[in-house]
Length: 433
Image (cartoon, rainbow, N blue to C red; front, side, top):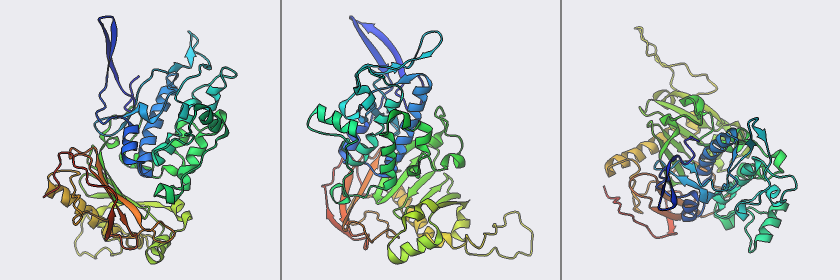
């Protein structure tokens, strides 16, 4: 098998009665290690990694292979912090013989927390490729840092899995709000085998509004699973309070803001794709601190030169001479959208982030000092949210290390840091300018 999200087999050899396998190096360990260290990932991160894993599953299944032990401990992180599915020790072929006859497997195998109920039936009907879809329940663990059916005994885990007996943590216990879309997509994976979605259906789920599947493929070219285009590969991820930042190999940047908007800017800084709220919803959020959940389904995208978006409400100037660089006419019903969605302030924030990278010596090297930590002061929900809320500053995948700091912040006054939650963890990294 050869796929960008599967650990590559390089060669095998024997020595002193032992067989050795040479595999692709994944220097950042497993997804489980990162989730344990971070005590859960953000929803955008879970979306990003889940898209990659779904692509690997689709490829395996197209080859007639089922993994049967998909869990975070068997999903690894390469040097660009992309996922790689590995450890095929329990994998099996679903097709056999010259006629490629499809068969169902009956072996009881896997890790208790992620075993599909049909595997537990011990040979009654057998199981097929849908056991790998069930294992994608690890989205639950990625968000909460605990498997959904975790219990004190294996028998109790199996009972809970058969009965789909699990509960999402509340905002008070989890320290964050988990969206209904994120919960719904996990529920679809825990259906009976004949009702579980295929990988293509998973990436089309409403929860996948985020990096990996949100029409970005249409804007930046094909995202075929076997593609090696640099637009697909993340150099590093950075979180600045409640703002997420991704930097891709081709140089384009993506910033996700807490008002559920997103900016993707090309490497030259000349073109911008802006995922935004409807104008009335954005204005209501700015005025009242509340957001109708229905407005999240009504988000749209503006794709224009960056300078045009910054001057959306300015009419093109009349010129006495002809020019081929005339700014486009903007439809009247669109002109107020960037301002309502705080677009200009978001661009200034992005400029501040990049400026700090430059002054500190490289991409991703942002100050972690309390007095200099970058914080987004713009619009966000401030009603019916946990106050104070936990915000985190961390960089993953950049060569500066992976320091992580968290603090309590009142979303009504987001630039005032509250109590630090954990002590600074320094790994041979300097944050001074």
